[in-house]
Length: 113
Image (tube, rainbow, N blue to C red):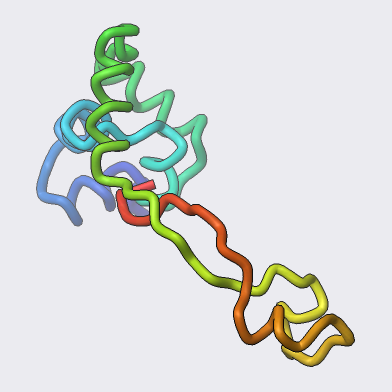
């Protein structure tokens, strides 16, 4: 039986080191996010990174990643009903006008988080 690492390497056509370098350094993804993408747990990604000699980002690199990823997010007004009773059926005893108009909330949308 092939190991999870071998299966992932075959799927991407790259070594695990190259996969992690792309996702961690180029795409600025966290180990947690990489783990979700690869279908493994965080500890596994950290182990693979250590074995591949992938170094943690410096403080400067981390800030650059934050700048780059937050640049793809935009704040937008969203009108939504936040009534807990309405999350499923939209038939609660609250003021009907609130359900029709919703509440204005600011939310970050877009990006890869």
